Image (cartoon, rainbow, N blue to C red; front, side):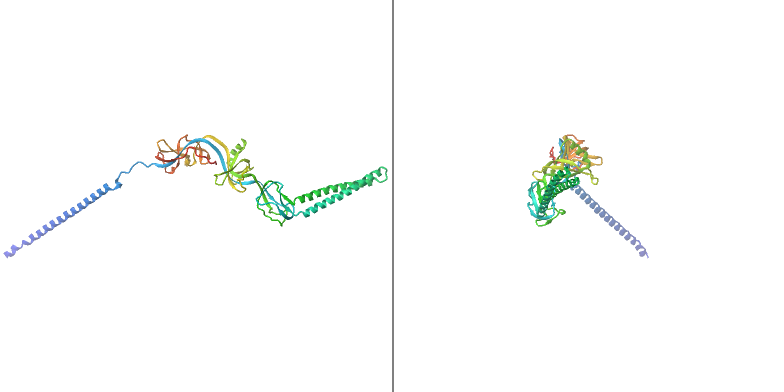
Length: 411
């Protein structure tokens, strides 16, 4: 029993040793984990630092804004013509439809299409035989009545002599006098019939009523023509001189009337592209009434057209010169901007910065606009690149327009 008592305490001592070993093992594991975590954190920090130092995005960005590239022009003074331009059409100064004035067969056509003719030239002929016969008949009737008149006048003379001696009644003399008067009236009617027949015969020769140019023939010889025909034989036009009928807004009525009151108003006809001048003329008249549907007025200008550069039916731009503004301050129209407060222009200061400037403008002449206030002669205005500008923004001038651009016309 003593042996058994001596073996009892051995088991607790082994259990304590196992616990100590497990504690030491856990401590080693914790130290190893802490070391790995610390090493990982150190590597991450080193990586982030290296990336921050080497990355180009870490470079300091400039705080100043880049300059805005713009094109500018210099405000300058010059004489500016005040002009108005309206779309119009060329008209011949005279247009005549050559029609027959008597019915008959178109016998001959004596013109060539496109030919220039003079007033009185014979253009065509209608068969004259019926009209010549009518003229001969009228002449014969006159001759007959003239012979009867001679006999009646002789009888009247004899009756008057006999009446003096009371050989015949006074009633016979009066009756004979009436016969003479009747024959004289018949002769007068015969002369009128002769004139009518002669005129009808003359109408068989169709003549040019004016100088002009013949167009395209619409009726050929051999056809029977009538006075009531809707289609003329041919159209004759006089294009020297020619007229231009054009329209302008009615708000310019007073300006145009004032210009007419001071003398002839020059009108220049330009082609449809408004680039090439065709002819120069003068304003002839303003139409009597304004069109209320379009609020426009019609005007007519006359052109000598000696070189025939204006052609009937052609559309042209009629440029009307009202007056000339002397020493007016002008800038390109592209420099004029519209904002909430009205019109303004971007000015380039001496420090090459942008500044918006309120302006007031006058008439526009071609690509130029007259400035009545807000600018001074020699100031630079921005003509291109305005949409990127802000007040006091720095600008880079990439082009300068000429001081005095050529004016091509006014509106």
